[in-house]
Length: 549
Image (cartoon, rainbow, N blue to C red):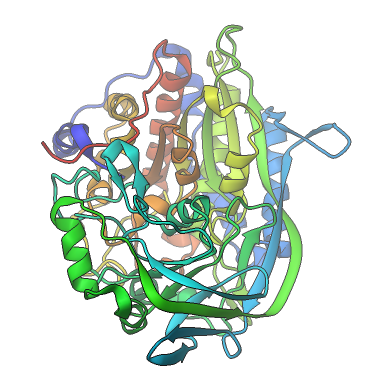
């Protein structure tokens, strides 16, 4: 999500690309380019976001219908199945085994044990859950931001032992408001997400992590930001939680209020505010045991079941014998938030738009007589709304080697004009006219990839925008299916037209899509993917993007 070195170049292009005369499309690629049609997008999205699919909730029949539709369209386009079934036969489906559960908030309990006595809390003072019922008591350790980043020269676990302990840590990352921070300036890096922190804690022997918002923050906490969305975020009963059966993460992640966090850190010998300030001042970790204290967790689920969704996967084999083993990924996710009684969360933009975009690009590439040199894997992921689960599953169980996966273009919400909403108010500036604007997320991790896209845009004329690579309040970088592949050091961009008041509301319907802009975005992705698949040079990945010079 970092703007890094190419931020200035991208900003300069954004000022001119919407008015510059588009360059020509290479003749060898024009048949596929011309195959991208608004009429297809309208028809397909009318089906996927219609009442009949009931909001495409993961593990529900409407999403299964979407899965089967994508597979049928991949087959009709002429792709090859990219997976194999249990018998070893070619298949369009990579199974994604899931556990669905609902935390019993009335029974789940967190208790602090200290020399001064004990304190207990229930929801909403702490949130989160775990796919298994759990009873755990362990000593407490404060581990700063919970980050180990050798490339930045920073490690919150240096000099402390987390084995057998519950770790308390801050959200986000140090110095996030400093454009010159080694943590990529003012945007989020991949170190800032709770999942990465939990995996890091687990690797250091921790039994659970407790996350509190940064006490000196200049933005809403993540819990507050989610509550500002409204819509499905405030649904009653709440949406169920899902988790991968075979997830690499197997310790609980809980969040707590500022007051609970202060109580947990009472034995630290310093206030939470002073601890954060000391870390942020010069990136000096302040991690320490919290003497005489332990935490007891009782986590209980009222409902727990197993089910299976699927990533839908189709392959266009590369035409060059020497390069066909290399892969470009084009992706989206098929699920949304389902229904609640008579209310349907249609998910036209999120992410019917991305799903039909992947299908339309499959048609475009297969309609083109010339074929790219590298292979293209078309993927529509499962259970993104439940935590990027299908993408994490494919990244952990790749169908083609990740070592030779050269780039990824991910579509999530590519159909609307960005508008102010409660989630974004006061946190990011939205341009007055977004009717021709596309947000690119992830440029800091691959300036080479960014150059490919901005060069391809000379034939399209969209206004490209990198604002979301420079902000830290909305957690954008972590919120779509490109992120698990960034964690695997793969150059991956998220194409995103921005938030709007219908985001995760029942009013996200197909009649509000800007189909002309959506077609242009797909044309840009088509030309970019061709370049990525054909060029001799492949995009380099930047492990730790720098801040401003």
